[in-house]
Image (cartoon, rainbow, N blue to C red; front, side):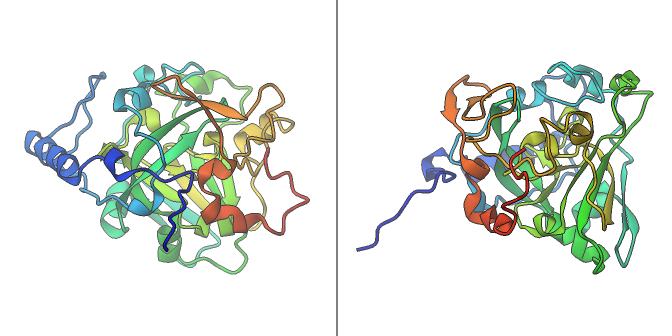
Length: 310
């Protein structure tokens, strides 16, 4: 007899948005030539690629309402409160380029349009767990980081990937806080970068990625705390030495390089055993690796002495 065992990240078919509704909505948006979520400014969607959903990574929870996910954000370049979506509207999202350099065979500067045309773009519904103990579920559009690395060719000496966020003082008032080590820098190992879950995001909810969510292009690894995701990326470098990330440089006793989600290891100032679901306010237990352990636990088998969870 076949016995099906439910995993923590799985979602029942009844909870998934029907494909006809997803693509029907996109067709209507293209016909109108724009998309609006009731925020200041309009996100152009006419030329944004319709992406099929990858069902392999269903999150096991309902998708967070779009307005909740786009009006409750951390992005310190625009300020320290959660309402940064207002000042973020001043960020010019086009034209935008990302430089890929360092230990690669073919360094290049890509426009976001280049990437959406050349890379295997798809939609993935991922959990996002903030280190502040709140979470959301978002349908991201993007492509695996591994596809970009294949395009530029990784050299043998590359051990880490370094991500750098835009620093534009004219439109980012948070940069006036000169005690922070701008620009925002994050990183991961080359093995983590090659994991299929590692995703470069160019859209959400079937539309181009908004500025407050890290538009026009950001990074996301759903098994790590959200601060590991570089937003509004301008540079991706392959390097031999481990980069010191933004929060690690500021508060190394609280934020380390790995930042793998673990409910059993508290933040020095609060518990990580549970999380508040954005939009519903429900308190739910946090899962090891945010529920993605099946896909990533093998990355850490030989690192028992490392501070994996901070």
